[in-house]
Image (cartoon, rainbow, N blue to C red; front, side, top):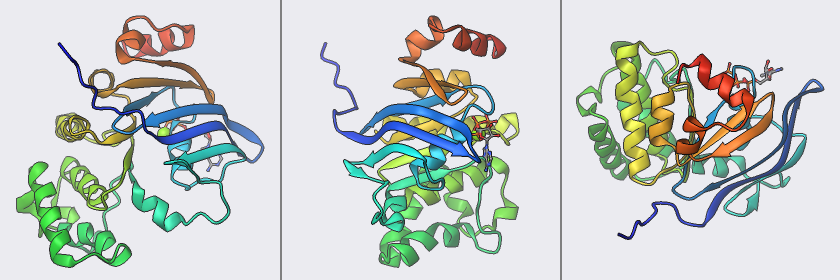
Length: 252
Ligand SMILES: Nc1ncnc2c1ncn2[C@@H]1O[C@H](COP(=O)(O)OP(=O)(O)OP(=O)(O)O)[C@@H](O)[C@H]1O
Ligand SMILES: [Mg+2]
């Protein structure tokens, strides 16, 4: 049987020797990481180890003090980098759905593609409807965020990011503030995206999900990459004591 990988060899994001400090406190230390096109990288690690900071560095929300980040071979540390352009290629969804409360679902989704990308409204509307349908929320197009559940809002936040046609999506604990019964519906959307070949970097505390979705697990501890492994290897046979201890806490 020939197994065709959904990944290809093209490196989409390349992180080399990344150093990040907050007020002289080292938060990320010499991070090397490659994310290939179509690859799903799940970043695990204890609270405060630097997971969110790493994602925030990737789309320029945090200045870095050393090393380099390249998107499709282009350095993001270059002084002339056009961040507005770069951020359109890197979609990000956070723990707290940041939908504009005074705008309907569809207005929230159309805003970036029409105002920032200056795309044709009807074309974007078609795409938005298809995406809303895929996440089961087409009928909530004209609702306001306050009329939606947490899980629904988070699925809308994902659609809003996808509608910009990003090359890679970053997810930072997108289910962390959801009630347990709503976690599944959001994770399913991300699993579906992974199947379709979306390149993703995901921070999560959902170990079953991490196991199922990841091509590669990156285990961070105190700002250092301790392990990079396939999910099979990592969950069955973590090499470092720190990772073993971490997994014990999750009783995984
Ligand atoms: N704006 C900031 N100013 C100063 N220190 C910060 C700032 N943001 C984060 N830190 C510190 O940097 C370290 C890494 O934080 P980060 O939020 O990246 O951790 P995390 O792995 O995402 O944790 P969690 O799992 O709790 O979300 C922590 O020690 C944190 O206190
Ligand atoms: Mg975090």
